[in-house]
Length: 498
Image 1 (spheres, rainbow, N blue to C red):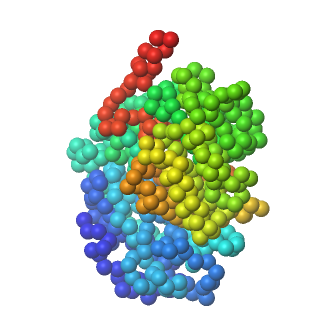
Image 2 (spheres, one colour):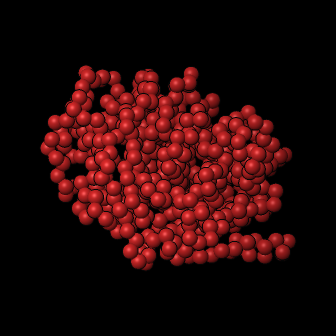
Image 3 (cartoon, rainbow, N blue to C red):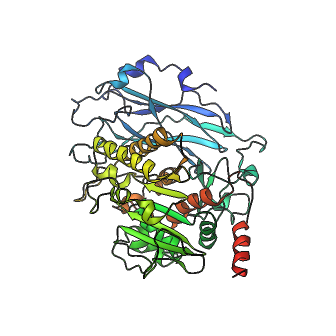
């Protein structure tokens, strides 16, 4: 099976104009493949027929056109995002030319896959910058010919990627493994040890490792044992995660609550007694019996109490100028001096930054942040970067006018990870908690539910699944070996000695 680089782009693609052709998908080779093999996928966007605007420009190295494309399994419903890149040709750098994009896509499920997608924006209108307004979301369907089907065959079910082999895989040790969503009823083994299902009865299953299901009590015991101090920097999405964590999963857990507005979308202003959600610096002490609560009275902020784990949460609106307290103040004041030395610091960006900052402003602030992180935390502190939430299928026409788009948010996410790894990766561990790709791999009809929440929050059931990515990253053995009930046995012994 040849890669895209080995398959010539037909010369007539570059001559296409909008008056001649709609944007379309091309798969040069469509014969059967085995699990794990790749298929070359291309999208051709004909040259515009009308005079183009020069107002919007893409980020360096990013495309003029925003194309959302998936390869979708006819039987399983598995949705594989196609991360397209511009073909290396000078015409792709021209605003008014036809553009050709391609990707080598690995397919790891036995099924017949067909392309499904839209052209979201032309002419870099996916990237509102410098005060330009978000552009109305009016996607164009991508033309797909009837014969464009890729059959993936699992001939003997001995392939490591075969679903039949899943239970023999090692445990996941990262929070960003590649995976797919499967209907729970179609998984051929007991699903009770897998991650919890979403509100459509689908379970996210990684390809090369296994995710365990953790109770919030077990995760809290893991924190006490391995992470007595944890620092978190984030926005309202982190707040919603902490509501789940501090209530040991009880927040928004009842069937009746699943359809309420706070659990589906916006919880700001709701009464919450475990910590003051409006404060910009919050200390939370966790234990597996009562959950998490902010301590009262006189206490040392820099030390976790006996048999508890302490979380320091710095609430911010990214690195924007919209923070009531400048985002850097905690670092300037000496965050470790006041709030202890953490084993892990989790940093969440993109959500506010893509919405309200230009790339140039954000790049300057990110440089400051990386320098402050290096100064504030030693090599013993792992840095976990939480991506922004996946954005799909709309634009912000509210008074807030957030500058969101799917491709813009993805560009911020990848830029953040690249900068941290380039600047600090040789001196400390930098890992990624990828909640964006988790949602991006959902079927399009489920992603299309996102427009019902203007703040782009995940609903409560999805927060549980996002949290499990972190639980497995922090608590599974580093070598991925099976080690169930270890934290339980250790802590039970400690408790029995009290």
